[in-house]
Image (cartoon, rainbow, N blue to C red):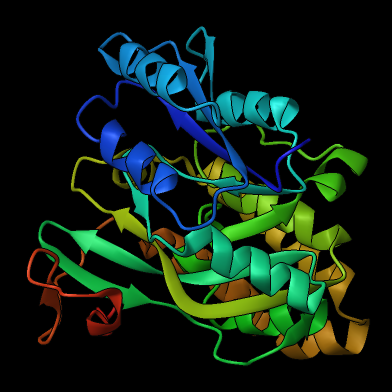
Length: 296
């Protein structure tokens, strides 16, 4: 039988963090999943680590390919996925023990086409709870778009890894990552998915530990991205709102929509400083104690 969830992890030279990532998936309470480790031509010991876990757990499948980038790697994972739902992880991050169960339960109970959840942001040994939508229950596309408009460049909306997608919707509409760009491709995918989604449900519980480092790919690409790519991302974002909102509503919200240009110009360029009250990751006894925030 096909699994309920396909969990896709693109892997490239991740030997230092890969075991933590994989084990966080395999040690979940939710067990009806397949873990697709898509090795993007790693030159370190990542391939061997992947094979080790594949040999030890029937839920793990390793797919090896030449190095073509993270978007192409995720697309290959999508083409191989068999689950009802799709979940993404990055190999330097990890998930909470109840991550998949919380999102699957939310999807089933609500009937939503997409689940979006809170997450933890980790810098060094400091961790903070990040989220945005506090409303319970189903959100229409218009309601969700209204929330996103307030924080357009927030990782909460832009990334893949705090969301649960329906594979049927992805396949039916031929959705994929744009492999020609190296920045904002995940946000572009989210916008395309939202265009064909009927509704969304937000989960206030953090499900993911996102590790932010000064030399991360995200930090580098945000700083080096050309104006041309940023403007292309804005055009997609603007078109999304023109499609979702009627003319009167769009004109009323137009200034907020254009705020995206300012926000993407700033996000990721400077490493944020933790605000007073953030806690040590090592000292935390449970996820519930990590409820402070950084001003990002």
